[in-house]
Image (cartoon, rainbow, N blue to C red; front, side, top):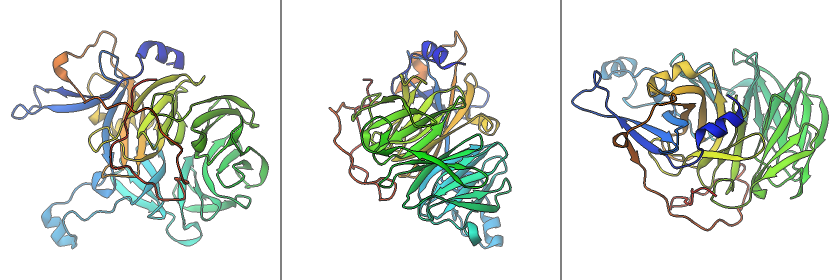
Length: 406
């Protein structure tokens, strides 16, 4: 499905809804199963919240009390993520950079197992922030304290590490062909291009500032298959699309709470259909744009229930993991790919959504839909203080609001 087709067919926008559907043959005592979709009817739902995980308790089979007694484990004891940031997903496995646990957490939904990478030896991580996986399964982890890109094999073994030229504070990376693009948010705010096999620096571009091709504490980068670089330019409250040589194609955004505006743009990634996904840590939503930067819709929102986010930091898009989450999908909803979103606050740290559509002609009755309460609108926001990667984020006690379209 092309981006333009998706835009014309979807009626983008709207808050999320809970769909209460009664499953006749599976119903027990008239219990209802609930589904969370974005946006709300009468617009056509395009994103379904599926499930969440924060550690071993959500991926490994649960033991009974007798097994816990035999194995010497306390009931409820679990290994869990401490503070997630970047993540990547492939074949039912979600790799999560844990900046407090100082490791990459492996949530293996396919194999129902929990594991860790980068805790011993030369591959020991000090502050992993983001991760990328290539077609062969090699993992490239950017570590801001080491000032390096640390490489792990398809078998999750340490391979090597590349130095990022000092002074540096690398925060994200992207792969394209034989090149590795590393985003540096120190005083230089440069993008360093390295040979992905040798680590040799090939070139760099970008600078600290507010002009086109310049950044202020940039947070995240991603590259499209056709060779364009997208940058989440956090303290300029915008996103930029650049050529691979650093020439600006377009930039979108300004401070605010409305769709198309940003409070704290963070993780940025591309869906298989070319849709640009941007995580906003201030408004606690994910915004979606087409390749020309036109706003499409958003999902998430502040809260603690299904589909909500708490200080989200990053997102990963993946088609290969669909079979392992199909059991959570509404029987009529056709999934194109999955979106995994990391929250830094709350009990639900890794949230799983599906992007797709209902068949033509399928309509939800009013009785199936319970719309969530509307949030009050705010005029906008002021400057964001501090580097939200290197410093502890501060979460407001009142929910962020003003999620209406702009």
